[in-house]
Image (cartoon, rainbow, N blue to C red; front, side, top):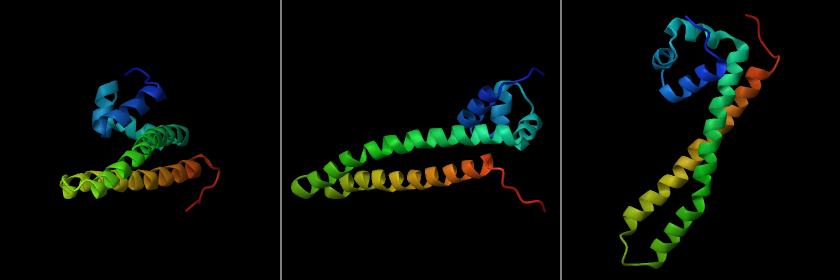
Length: 122
């Protein structure tokens, strides 16, 4: 088996969704991927990459908050539009922007912990 770069494995893990699929896509065994995930440096790189993907999604979602608000305002002003349909779509933007923001915060905190020298010996 050839050595797979951290970047290639991280990309596979992020894009494939499962360790098994990621392993297959880069020509590794699932066990080899699991072992790499135990490596502190690799795990920090992986966590940072995940955080970056989530951050980008949060920024995209947050960029649409203004449009969602405009939609809500349009519904409030235009009595000919079925408000329940348009309002549900606008509400989804708010809901997911909040969820992704919370996820980003959690992932950033996890990344900070993973890169710190703090550890507990059990």
